[in-house]
Image (cartoon, one colour):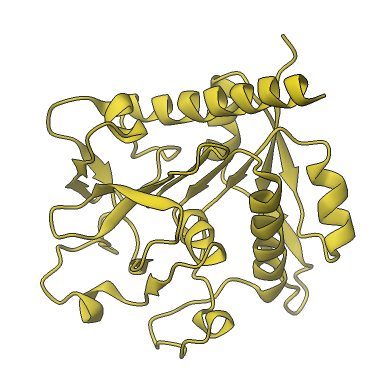
Length: 247
């Protein structure tokens, strides 16, 4: 069987002083795709919609990686002092690609800021700073402990429940923004006990779309987390099969 091509967006850093502009991506993202039988294709931030369309014509799925914060001003909100925006070139590319992925119903998995991107691109919004927006929330980021973890509560019948099953689940946590209102066509399928959204899934039968606020690709992930990537590849193969039937 031909391995599916999975586009992976990359972070982007503008040139500063003697340092040239460059793209980078943590190895955990593409290693996880390789482990479950996909071929990751790293995507630089294209600057035209036409180029985005051409690359999506060749891909079987897309993984949106984490990173710095989405700029809330692009969605009509003020810039909170805690927000550290992504480079504008990366965010413009990511938002364009997210819209086009949705139009094509291309299978997609968003992690961290990638889940937040998936949500806002489809009409949802975000909490800009959990400690202020939800003062009673548990800590979701500990600068002194990159392995900081909290428990999850899973929705019955969801992909997340299928992955993790019964029993207490603890996931890594390294964010200060979070999903607030969930986009139409999506459902919350995992929350922290304090109510913070930790996973969303598409409820649309023609689109496999999944997001996790935690990072199943990271070194701090659990052994079970690779199952999320396996489920993503299942969604990709099902999409491929549907496209062959249409053709």
